[in-house]
View (cartoon, rainbow, N blue to C red):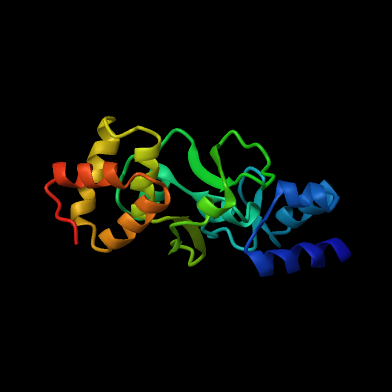
Length: 198
């Protein structure tokens, strides 16, 4: 009974539990099996359990809940912003260089100095109403420039699409460009794209 209440309390608080939580808390697998069999909880996918079979599992929310300092970046950030349909082979995240993050084959992890990591972080709301952190479009452009990815087809298109982005903020773009010391490159790219600097 103790385990059932413990599991239900956790799911009520966070929406689901996963196999990591089960192992960390040494919850007997028999308890989980019995709860699934009696329909107290439902298996959503391998290692994920919720109170309802209609629970909307969201990979991005899940990753955010497990890794507090992970910020979605690159094309993953653009996907969350609704600015691309291109999904990279692995989910791109950036973390501070002093943050210990568990290795995960699903993730492409970039480490950055904490004072630079924090620049350009915004929040977006997922379909399950959970908020996740990602980089702004402006920060993504800066990162593409810094990684010398400008000539890649998908990157060039993503930068071109910035012109029609409804939340475009060129002042923020140039603020970040100064911080990351790529102001000349940003100016050149925007001129090529027939942008005018505000």
